[in-house]
Length: 427
Image (cartoon, rainbow, N blue to C red):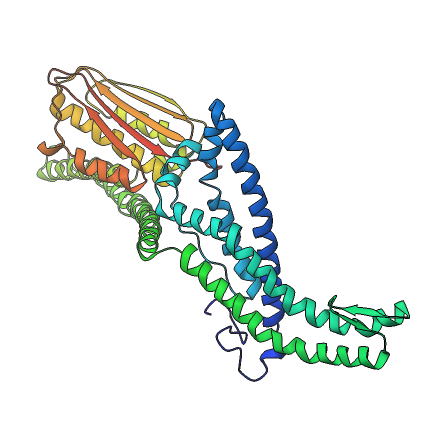
């Protein structure tokens, strides 16, 4: 079995020194714990099934029956962790993370996942088939040699006789001593079948409860996307910082130098006109660079958060914009970035295409969901296929598991809504 590390490999029980390892004892503990858990599970499922069946007449038991379908989720997680008793790592879970926080989203995803029903099937197998096998094997492997080993001490304590395994009456200490020797010799022999059964059961757990190929690929895609988002945001902040602290400061210094040179040049000469032109060009380049920095990652978003950054974007919009936010605090950086650029792109579209006289930006956070709405009183008719940037904006929001919806009937008004599941941070 590949679940063990170091020298204790369950695929090699016949190798020299196997009996000196902890593998047989771990196998016995694994089967004893899994068998006991299966017995308790069996009793619990029988009681819950009877109760749900009785209450189903009054319709009260229907939710209980629906909940029983999910009993495999926690039990399978327990079985995966229990594999660590054998000395190796547990098995990762196959379940995806819900796109939104909250119990309803979790339930919808769990009922739709094939892994949930695989886990339910294994749970029923463990509750009604596997636990008797587990306890029988570990009982025979430990109880029989244990009884033989205890024959002489029990005879000494009783003084007359001892019933070995309830089958054999022993009255003589030498016979009891021979039984103990037999138990001592039998103990290492049962280690091999005990370990083989434990290895087979662990293999079944890995086969049924480990993520399948498609689930592993989906999980890796989700994790890689999260890593790419974090790396992308970090790179945006680095570029913004380098431009802000490097090129922008040099342009400011150049503009100041040109301004001072204009003061020293003759006011009516050709040099003054050329310096004035150069000063004006430096100012325009500086203004363009500032716009570029804001387009990459505005400093106000990093320093003060999403509401102030959106208010700054609204101040730079040629269309009057009312801004209102109700947030509990700072949100994760990728979420703030996606929300800000959604607002910026929406305001740019309003200025270019809507003919609106007034726009509004509203943001709120409730039940683990950030909702941003951008509305205007323009002519409407916004079409994502018409090159307005809505398709790219939807892709940007989707990177953080968000959704974008647009309502823009001809004649207006237009409403763009962004919803992103997230949790406030402490920063």
